[in-house]
Image (cartoon, rainbow, N blue to C red):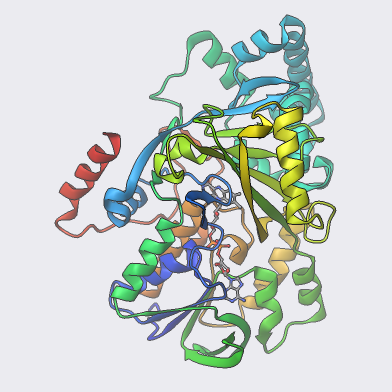
Length: 503
Ligand SMILES: Cc1cc2nc3c(=O)[nH]c(=O)nc-3n(C[C@H](O)[C@H](O)[C@H](O)COP(=O)(O)OP(=O)(O)OC[C@H]3O[C@@H](n4cnc5c(N)ncnc54)[C@H](O)[C@@H]3O)c2cc1C
């Protein structure tokens, strides 16, 4: 029989940890959430500055699990807006829609490039079928899917900006999670006969909380507290003692004092390598080495405040060129008009991918703002110097788990060690070192909550599907998933919220 704990201690108040707290706490269980920051939300943070609101990088809600979407609409009620998606890539002074459209490439680069791309793709298909070589690296994955020319045009430079290393040194796994199912064949078919929405629908619309994505974790936190449970902010977990099966003592530092809590289950969403290092009995040298070697990329977000109604129609714009400091931006006003102080102003949120201590991270906030504004004004000519009114810089550690060529082996070593702690559960993006979106971390967290309530369910199955995350193919992969049991009054109110959001 599944063990039902009396007190669940949750490490991390990001969406993943809060989802477990929400499921257990609102269904009668006892939970305590320990969060090191003075706010909940983790990477799903929204910052407010001089009337501008912005996420660390535009966060949209999308899930293929309709039960999860129902749960989400129920959680957010009347706070949602529907946003039309327009994603483009800026490459050599021209705009290309993403996912790639052949008509677009033809218009922007001409027949020679299209032919080159087509032959390069056919050559890669031929080589792959003759050699039957395993696809191991990110470069191999992109080339086998798109051919060398399209890889060079649309994937190589951006990937190297995000990850800070050549695609040959990164695992193919990231590509299969993010773009499997997207292919040259799909693009050709869409160009020739148009996209059949019944079979393959690229999400062209998504839900978003009108005051920023952080409202999602904040809503969960409100419900957890209303259910009589505790969320302790400014509580940095520093040590965990395992006294035996289902008997944990979690130490944390709050208000400069060391404190501890006793519980019979622990849910960890804090970085996996860090968790391995703070557990006692302590891990072996092999586990320590694996834990130390798990790498994350960090992020600097720059909110550029602009006196102009609108800069671009895009939901995201990807900037490949390596001489531009940022790799992607979005315009929050295009997502929700409540993200700007008034209609005469807009802002751009630029994402600068980096690693703590590197050249970008070491720049001062003023230097970063000056460089980004100069790139926008002089190199890209997206805004004029006199429209610029100010910038807010936010630095975030542990933003992206890096799938290097050895990451799976390191995770396996750590997980084998963690399996010896009965009652310890790992979940979330950094928590299991999996490239989760927020919906994945939330679904995982809700399922883990159900498991702790006694259901036989595998939360680790989330985000393991091998079809492209953004395509609805009509025959979804079979895995355990979250089933929402709505309260009786919900069905009607969900429909109403959807109608209001559309209006
Ligand atoms: C730029 C960017 C854009 C993104 N866009 C999207 C998007 O469009 N859609 C989408 O669905 N997802 C998006 N994501 C991903 C999304 O942000 C994450 O999937 C989600 O936040 C993961 O939630 P989590 O709870 O698993 O982890 P986290 O959000 O990382 O939460 C972990 C929490 O643990 C806390 N913690 C860490 N160490 C300790 C400690 N020692 N003691 C106590 N607490 C600790 C942290 O402070 C944090 O609050 C994006 C991410 C980034 C960086």
